[in-house]
Length: 148
Image (cartoon, rainbow, N blue to C red; front, side):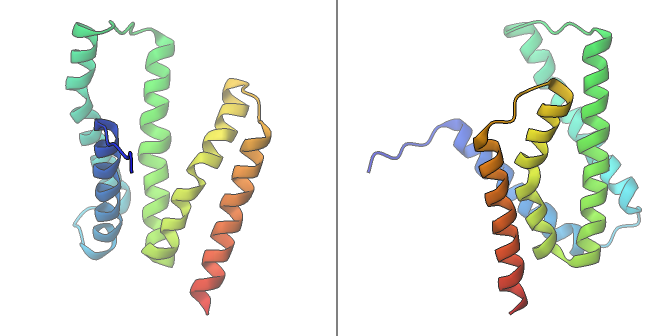
């Protein structure tokens, strides 16, 4: 009854719709580029589209220090999730189909927890373990349901 939406909800809705369209058209539309080249171009144009936000944030909110550490993590974020992960996802889609490959998205919080633990020395709490177990059970149930 008291449900209220804010701008973040609309951003998530837009991102979800974009992801769904990307997943469907990644398989259906044939491209003259290889999967790796296509994913790299998507990552490149995604990074370019974020530059205005970097400048706006630097001018109006908080200036960004372009240290070596900062540039390393920007490079890591560009290569790891933006190119390698999407390349693997595109190949997985071609191998098993969009419906099954879509289940990989549910593993992102699990990956994030492990990255936090191994790269940033964060603690793994019980809720991480319970949530990860629930994700794996959901994927298992979904796969068993689809096979019948």
